[in-house]
Amino acid sequence: MDVPYDLTSYVRVLKMATTPTREEFMMVSKIAGAGILLVGFIGFIIGSIMLLLTGGF
Image (cartoon, rainbow, N blue to C red; front, top):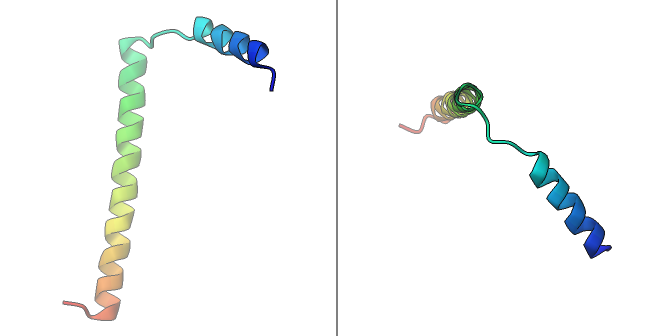
């Protein structure tokens, strides 16, 4: 593990990174939120089906 080389590559990446614009941030937030809702909805459907199949009311 070459520590000086690793540190310089980390610094290079940090220098290239920029703060996203408001539009970019909003787009990423909407996509992430939609993904979270989709996964939650799929989990709810699977849980409901399992509850109905096992008759656990």
